[in-house]
Every structure is written in C-alpha cells, then in structure tokens.
Image 1 (cartoon, rainbow, N blue to C red):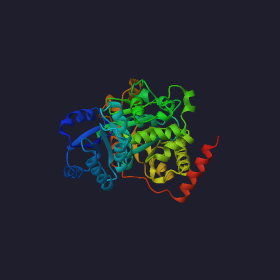
Image 2 (image 1 turned 45 degrees about the vertical axis):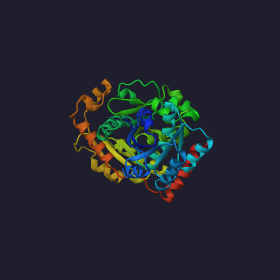
Image 3 (image 1 turned 120 degrees about the horizontal axis):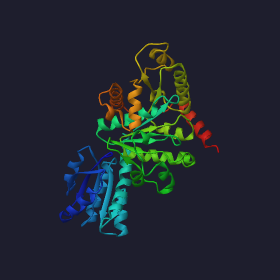
Image 4 (image 1 turned 90 degrees about the horizontal axis):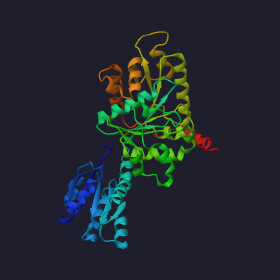
Length: 398
C-alpha cells in the first residue's frame, strides 16, 4: 500500500450510498474514513486531522451542496475536493469548480475516470503536506556498496513504517537494483520517459513493481544507450510523482554528477554519501562533499555512511574520516563480505538471508534514525542560490 489518503464522502442521497462506496473502494490508495450527509456532520468529520479529501455528491440539490463546498474550501484550503453528479450542465460543473473542487466526475462513474480525477486532486493535497522524504544514496567511489545500502535501507524503511517505500534505480546505464531483488520488471524508467506529456500518477503506478518486502521498485532503462531519454525534465517529473505517491523515496544515484544528478540532488532531503575506511575513499568523500556544496546542496543535508567497518583501528581510523569531513559519521555498517555476497547472488535482502546478522541490524537502526529525522529543508543561503543558478545555466548548455 502506498501513501493512503483518508477520504470523507458527502452524500445527501442515501439510495446512492452503496454505489458511491463501491466506486471509491476500487481506489487502492484511498481509505473511506467517513460518510456524512449534513454540513454539521462534515465539520465533525473534518476535525479528524487524517482526512485529506472530501468527495461531494452533488445530487439531488447541487446548489446547496456547492454552498457547502465553498465554505469548506474557504476554511480548509489544505483539503483536496472532488465532486460527482449525474447533472452534466456546464453551469453546475463550473460552479462546483469555482467553489473549490479540483476535479469533477460525471455519473455514471467510470472507474478509470474516477481514478484519474482522484489522483490529480490528491496530488495537490499530498504535495502541500510536504511530508515526503527523498533520500539520495551516492557512493564516494566505485564498489563501496552504495546500491546494497540503498536496497536494504528501502526494505527496512518499508517494514518500519508499514508502507511501501519507493526505490528508484537512477544509475541509468549500469544500475543493478532489480538484480538485488531477483526482479525482472516489465516496465522501467524508459517507459515513463517515452510517455511524454502523458506521464502521470496512473502511468507511474503501472511502471512501478511492488515487491512483497514493502519496496516499490522503479527500474533503470533496459539498455545503456537509453541514457539520452533520461532528460532532466523527465527526471524532475518522475521524482515529483514519486514523492506525491510515497512517504519515503530512496534513489540510488550513479557517481556521475551531471545535470541529471543535479535535478535529483536539488530535491533531496538527505544525501547519504557512502564510503569505506581507506585513504582513497576518504579523499573521494571529501571531494564529493565539496562538489555537492558547490552544487547548492545544504551541508546539513549531507550525511556520510561508513560501510564495511570492522571496528579495528588500523592505519586509518573513523576519527580520521570525521576530522576530514568535519562532521560525525551518520551510520556505520559492519563488514561481512560472505553474507553480502550471498545476499547479492540469491537476489534477496539481508533480512531474508539472516534476519539477526549485524549488518541487517545496522541497516534497521539507520532506517529508524532516518524515519525520525525532522524536516531538513531550509532556505538556501545567497551563496547556495547563486551556485544553483550557475549550475543550472551550465547544465543547460548544449
């Protein structure tokens, strides 16, 4: 189940209740919380802060219901409002829209029409909530285990929140997120890119593979030469749709920092930079952090994850890493090459291979920490804004 939208049905026609409820029951992302028939009961229902949408059935007295819509829209602009009626008079439809309804559905209700209208109305509400969490996972150098961390982190977040966690493979040419789950998706990012102006929530739902481990996977394009289809405009739209539909979105990024990466990093709440305890990896971590800062990513949004940490103090210690990056390590993941290799070869998450292994427990602890994070979005400094403006101009040059 993706992010669930709690809905209140306003219906003054009791004989239509069953039909309307059945239509709404066909929307797997909507939970019908209440049905009311008076403005007073609606006010009581809206005291429930979980309700995010009101579905108004205009019949039989459209004028009186539209008056209620107008009052709700004025007092609760945060709500998504939707109307339905058998009356197709353009004046009635226009009046409902002017009163505050984002979408209008004609009766008899077509399931596809209702689904599309609800998605469009819900998108406005869910985006306004600002509760989506976008996490970008990036390796400081090749082979540090960033993809393994992204995959297992997504699964742990899904289980801890009891909701599907979106996982997008944005390593467009050589990503292997699907392999980590032994999954062969029917649709990929390429299908979304080829949709053009038709790209919407319904299409995203089709392209995403819902896995039983509470991960909703969006796979990379099938072939490396499909990279050109992954334009910044397409990626911006895809990320917007993902963060509208899911509470948590985890993106596995390639090491290449270009216009495509910039679109994703610009939207990120947290950037997890994965490294190992070696001189080369620490140097690359420092360089990557400096690059991210120049791109306009806020320093407080960048966190470093130390992978394959054996706890031994050799030539390079964790304190050396923290001294170089000028901040504490966000999380440490123990080293167990045999177990991780077994997980990758089987195409199964670490929790499925050995639920009590230290690596899995460290992943779960990091997921718990991530979920508890407050909103890190802050107003960019003048220097960051100037940096973003410069990079946008640079990346836009053909």
